[in-house]
Image (cartoon, rainbow, N blue to C red; front, side, top):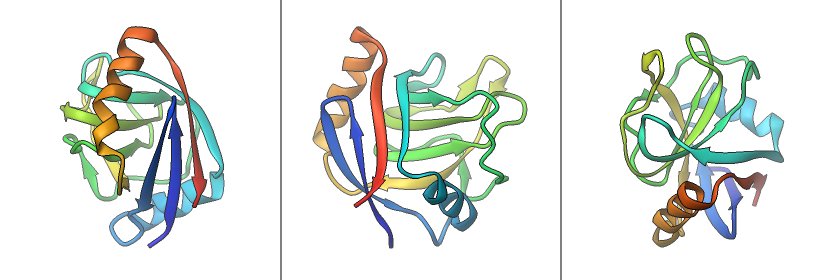
Length: 137
């Protein structure tokens, strides 16, 4: 298990890479770390924040894909019918875009800080984009 740290807005979350369930996605993301972006609130999907990544190519396909990540789970949509993106669920999510339902690779799970997820989501919803950084712990 590879431990990582996620700094999102004013919060720090310990997390782990899901290397057994999504080995290719985890390897590609690990190679990109430290990874920095901005999170904005999801448009259609419910209680989540996402990193729109345009045509960024991690070089992976689908593995361990879901349309319904649980709070504290992070998924990577590798691109295709919509742009590449990473989504962090802080509540109920039905992962969708303007082209319809999508599925993303569940590749990171928060191991702590869940009590701050709803606050982070509401902060992004009401105040706008926040910085996010993923690094090895």
